[in-house]
Length: 561
Image (tube, rainbow, N blue to C red):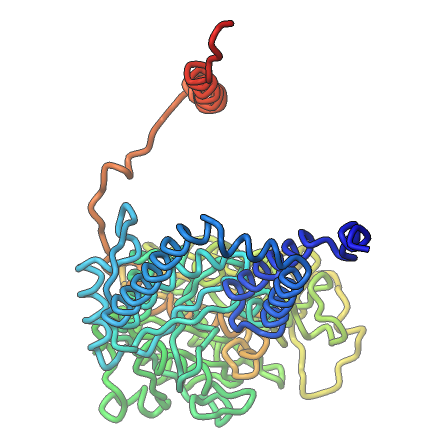
């Protein structure tokens, strides 16, 4: 009977229970390290591990007793106790250092610690009451978790030094693809965004090439350097005013210049333009000043054009968004006096026509709507080639003189496709037959200019001229994310006319002392081959051979019989 009991074997091998217990512990440890909370999986893994150990002890109690009485437990208990005490001490030291905010940067360039130069710059920018609150936005997903942890140390310093005026946020582009698309961001992209009423103004986001303190500091300079810039919007009618928040108004554009860029933005009436004592003091801005003419379907009075001529003669800058006269007559931009001013000063003019582009029709709309996708590389339209477009309604073509005035340069900004043509003498107040809009002999054809810039260096005056008046209107702001950049082009037009782009380019930069480790190492093909031979063959196989040689010398030698 005793022999039968001795020969009986457990249904589950005890060693399998030990393996299950070890696997449960490893799963619980993995969950504890990688997950934000221990969760059901971690608790379940611990439970399975405990039950497996208990079953092993019940099935083979003699092995458990041998373990308890063995030398491993006798001598290992002290080691275990010392290890537990050491872990507790290290945890307490870590908590103390973390609470005291003590840390050491072991990187070669101290790239995760702000230099004194950058620290002073951030403190100055944060102390300026005109500086908007800023946010550094980084797009780092799960695959870039390690980089995110390193960069967060640096961004936390920016936030602390600025006393909260510059904070930071991480966004996972895989979890929020729509937001990443609005930023035009990819994994690893970094942006500096001004905050308006606590919310990021994505349209004003400044891209940063990398999460480097020098590049971030330069972006802070560009965004916070406001300068003394002024924009005066000529009041043409009740719709095109900077206070009108409806679709055809200009409130969104004006608010952005005021709140984000710190410009002084005002309206100026024709009476104030012709009577300087009644309106703002033109020419008083220290850095840049622009008069914006947002349309106008009727010619300006001669006194107003004369005032603009004097303004330009003194180096004043103009941005003109032309509009057609719906009754077929002259408009503000095509009137005789304005045409003479533009031709004599800048060598350009606006034609009284309607541009029709069969290669640039807006889907589902009329031939009066124009989609422009042919841009130059000038600042105002840079980056739009092949990626975005400008939409116009009742667009007019622009004329550039063959013989420009002395000291004048003209650069086209936007052209139609080569399938475009221009119809003149149209009266929009009456019904127009489709036959009257078809191309006929005598129509100007080809790539027609619908946007240009001109500069008279002798006068120091700049002009931005567009053959349409819809670009700066509020309604287009919501279409930026769909690739229609009317609003951005209008904003850049005012920037360029006021030389704001030059102002930003001349801002100071942060310089870092060159370190020896920054010196590049140059090697030819032969030298690279030697390096590969040593690192891939000599070193690994040499170590292996050395280990075999040591084993041979220290092997146990049997005495000779």
